[in-house]
Amino acid sequence: MKKLILISALLFCLTSYSQGREVVWITKAFDNKIWLSVDGITTHGDQLRIMIPSEDCSIGNTRTTFLTVTKHPDVLDIKDQVVSARFRDMDIKVKIDYVIHQNLINGDFAFVNMGWNKLEEIKRFFEGYDRVTLELLDDDLFKPSDYLDISENTWAINGLNTNLDQAIVECEALK
Image (cartoon, rainbow, N blue to C red; front, side):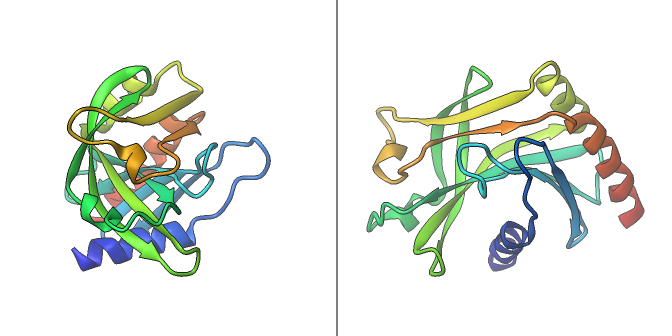
């Protein structure tokens, strides 16, 4: 678990930035995985990421983060919380895998797992969209708005399929 937290923190810190409105997908190989990411529009550092393990280059885990500076005393306790969400206008469930505190910015990052899918299914899911939005929703079981000051982000996803194809090539090279 500590290794996963370290990897996620490093990827957050090491990713480059997009200039203006240009969509820049970043591909990084790290720890026998390929990480494909694009910066958020609402919160720049909260990237949409697809992690592809070298053991099976045909699947990916879609993830993101939500930065919060609310200083809620129990924010670290929302680990493993299942959250209602709306993604690409569909109601889904996501899971907060863990939360880490960043002293440098005096804030916390909630790492959100959106699930595993075949890469071809991911391509089809996003086909025809230039942007997608993930909104974490309050419900009777959990209210993310109590812990997160920003519970929505949007990402420009132009070029995703081309970048996924390249990421698959890079993943195969890790074997």
